[in-house]
Image (cartoon, rainbow, N blue to C red):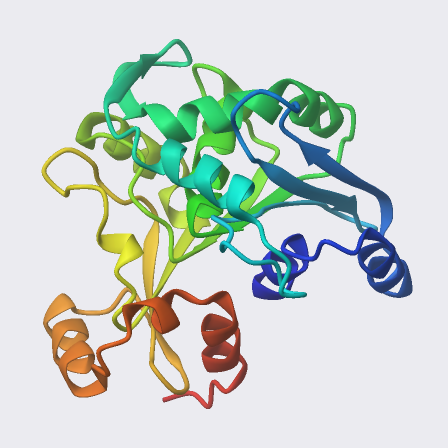
Length: 253
């Protein structure tokens, strides 16, 4: 899942197509928010033999991986991130969601849900940073007022909070054990927006600074580990490559 999230950041589509084709993936699609919508949403979709896969790209940097300027995409992302007013949403009548993230997922949901529902295979959804928030909202989209049984699992990495307390409880009752929320050491993004207004969902997975992770950890242990690993660079801990390296180096500790 972390590799899929990394692949969603790739801007060279030929590279992505080649990499996925070598793994036997099919029906590969790149879904984006409409030009001029004021949003910058990118989704990677493909199918394997037994499953559908959906990966949301997170907030992009002001430069691409190739070093080219990306000010427009970077600014659009952050304008949406800062729309933290809570908004009622028809499929979620009993709860409120982050307005900016809701607007973003709705910009691609019609096309994406149509593709997913045309396929009988279960779907696994992932995302990093704001992509994790959109992954959680897509799970709500798929079922409308109820969750759809085709949602297999949801994996997020460094995701901000996106649901209010009432809707988070509802989410956890229905998909909580199928959702895994990874947060890396001193990554600041999972601590936003305010905990008094928004709540995380799913099973927490604490990813250690150098190697390994703890599933459903005791929060006192998390605070202690954060103190020991603190280096003063919150941005580095949010980088998806750091998540990938730590998870890959897992040795059962």
